[in-house]
Length: 309
Image (tube, rainbow, N blue to C red; front, side, top):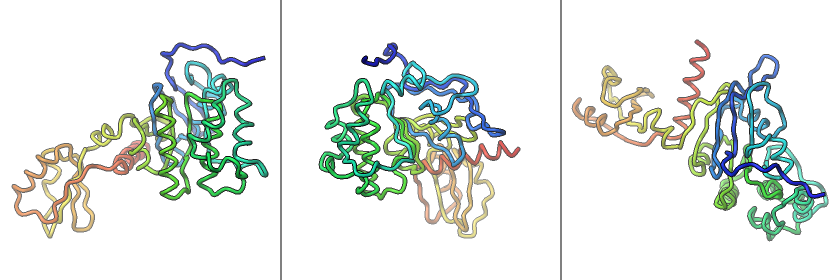
């Protein structure tokens, strides 16, 4: 008997959290998250270790049930979406089966789904066509990661969820992986990934969601998040100059002193630089955009201070 997935309207989003919470003992790993991810988006999920990312992913995959609120995937429950092959997952754990070729492994997994992706197509998307007849347990770390990607694609999913997909991979292999991922996303599919490599989020995500202490503390494009904490950094040598009045300069949001160098976070770098010039000669002046790392550290540090208080 052929298995079919529940019919849902095309307007249903890819991921919906409505007040979702998950508690382990005294720890609220997910603390009332509201989150909606549209179909076709590529979304990065960022957070420190223990922030709640992995628990949120487990709720999306039906590996855990929320204690409060609701989680829906493609308009149905996570369990229904996973069983129907509409969701693929690439988790950190897992070893290849011994004495099985890459093609045999992907074929076996594909046969467990009602509407699988053709095996040759899954292998091509993952960049494994030339390795299809190699034993999976004899591949390099980067190649095994691509096998995990092909397995995640086997069910022909509309949404793929990746938990630290490029951890411990070298730069060249990481680049190849994201090339494959962009090919999958270009078909109109939805990608959600967690990562500690912030440049990956900056380069590959349409949207970035930052979780801290089980809650969403920021949600937007990389540019939007950078603007939210001050879009530029103006830095210069103090050269014995005092720091009085720097916080009062136009556009300045915060001031950081590192040794004999001042770093001003500003949302109007032009106005800040003009005002600095009015104070006299400025040595070693540099203006640079805020990095995603600056954003992440600012957001999580602010949240930490609020928690302590």
